[in-house]
Amino acid sequence: MSLNKVFTVIFILVFAGFTLTSCESKKKNDGKKNVITTTIELPNRPNILWLVTEDMGSYIPSFGDSTITTPNLSRLAKEGVVYPNLFSPSGVCAPSRAAITTGMYPTSIGANNMRTILHTKMTGLPAYGAVPPPETRMVSELLRMNGYYCSNNYKEDYQFKAPKTAWDESSPYAHWRNRNKDQPFFAVFNFTETHESGLFEPYGHRKIETRHYHSGDTTYTWGEDKLELQKKPYIAWGASRFTEEETPVNLPKNTKFSIPPYLPNTPIVHRDMWKLYNNIAEMDKQVGAILKQLEDDGLLENTIIFFYGDHGGPMPREKRLIYDLGLKTPMIIRFPNKQRSETRDDQLLSFVDFAPTLLSLADIEPPAYIQGQAFLGKYKAKEERNYIYGAADRFDGVTDAIRAVRDNQYKYIRNYRPDQGYYLPVKFRERIPTMQELLRLRDEGKLDSIQLQWFREKKPDEELYDCSADPYELNNLAQDPSYQSKLVELRTELDRWLSEIGDEPNLPEKELIAKLWNGAKKQPTTSKPKLAFSDNKLTISCATIGASIGYKIIPENGKTPKTWSIYQKPLNLPKHAKIVVQAYRIGFVPSDIVTENRI
Image 1 (tube, rainbow, N blue to C red):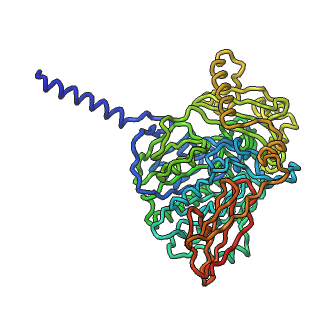
Image 2: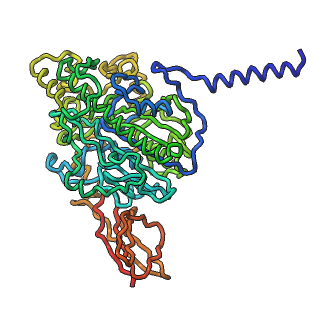
Image 3: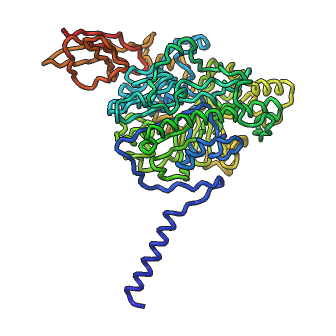
């Protein structure tokens, strides 16, 4: 054989091997291909759409559970990438949303106690907001500063009051359709159908929200029905406008469910499982309404679509707990033109990674203060995560102190209050019939050993679980000599993380507030902004370091803009116009509003 032929054969073999390596993927047990790391081609400044549901475990077909049909989410998964290892840093929504919007761990900014700005009667403490470093901005504000139209429909719940500069619009009417022509957008739609309150009795769905009344109608002016909304206020929590008789039935009520071992197999639990899946099917319809609007507007292939839940599932021993069932939530991302379709990406992801990833996809370098790392886009981290972290503190009126770290297989949990039982009597949760059933059977001595674990009066100092072999985290391996090296590894990593983010577990909340307020007895107030004219330019400043400054310019005709603009540089203020200004640092009381008339 000639030398040229030898080289030709070698080239063919090498190329064939490369092709197999690059194009063939390992099959997982759900039939999805493992994602291949390739460059994603994105439009310049792509639109980004977030579809966010509540209290969402892996209860959908694209994550291995085919109990209920979800045609819209299944289509999204078929055309996109499934991410099975996304974790919230908390098992409840408000701390999770603080992490999502700031890119910072809730325990590092005073955001991990549930509803710090509301639960003053339960705790006897003053209302307070999380106080991140002064340079911190909500990620939506950073996008607005770079020309994006940012809308939030409708839930906020960030553990602090959102600055007026955070959104172009945040309301039940917020929509990308309100933006300027050809302006890139970041639009968030929150769905409440799957919230744990959807399991309460009397059962019934919330009525379809305003954003869906005119699905597909691009000529509709959003906001025209506000008078009607005022007559029938939108109710977010636990209430419904449909009775059970009016609620659509998406699967037979006599469906038999596979009940997890930590719940009793009783008719009441079966009914709650039916509600759970029925609610998911309704949520899927709402997702479909938004996707139809996107397609009708011709924006599908210019938009990156995220679907995810705000933490794990709604059932007892899921929500609020630090086990995977409380922290882990499904995510699907659809890229323009179905790039990477029908694949999965198994890397570990945390909610703190969302803010830097969002900025990275928009070609904006994430600020240095952000604790997460981008997993997509121009500023994608060079290495994937080795660990994710979780924390549990106060839930409504009851408190615990738990921290956790997890790698791709094992989870280490440290209990700072081992003499306190696992179960916390959260009144809101006790409105779930399954929770009432658990308590009844506990009191009657009818729970088995697995179901009783949650009701133990004491906790071990440390827990270690093999999350692959033991997905419900029932078999504590911390005392098993075979796992001591893993225990030491994760124990050490947890200590490192706590030190890095400045977390002080078990710090009394009263002392936490004093720390956040720098020893003051009341919440700090953002300084009043100062306005100064020079060379026909208006300069605005604020003595509070890191404060965002929002303004509205009201022209001579007196028509007030709907949106607060973000002050970034000196302004031209037209003659006979008025400017309205407010400053706000996250976690502080907003400043007084200042007005100035230009003569």
